[in-house]
Length: 215
Image (tube, rainbow, N blue to C red):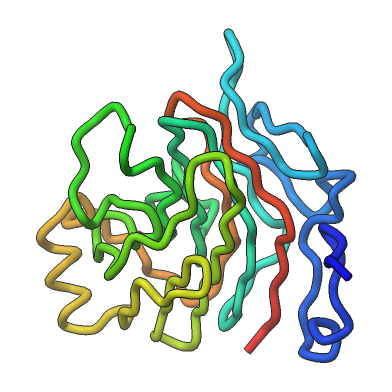
């Protein structure tokens, strides 16, 4: 029997998962700093889509989390660009100024040339994925993000594609070599919000089955 979208299985309940999106409302979420945004619910999923004269703001969990395992399904149209951020503080103008990002991107048809550390499932501008594990455009993918103290893992469709240690010497070297070099707030927090990034590409992005358990 197939699992029902936006519900917990018996095993997930037993393992301590909670549902962050019920498929019907955006209860438990708000736009970044409560700015005007353009998120809607479509096909029982959270949908970010380009609209003429729309205003865009990231979508943020009301709750904050420290050590956790996050599960989230996503799909996209061609040339889409979004992301899943974590350990985010709302103190700054943009969420990416604090939160590391699990990149959600159409690697093969995106409008700009991209580096390895900008590809799908990368920790954006820090470390690229070890494999291209994304499903074809239009199919649903499953992302898993594990944050356990300083150890972080990015998984895509059952494949661990990124592992890194926050605040390690390797991490500091990667930070200092890229766009976060002079951003002291980047990844500076041990507790923070989960964030879905607003519109950056040319295609729609959908998110559903958003589940989290604390570690």
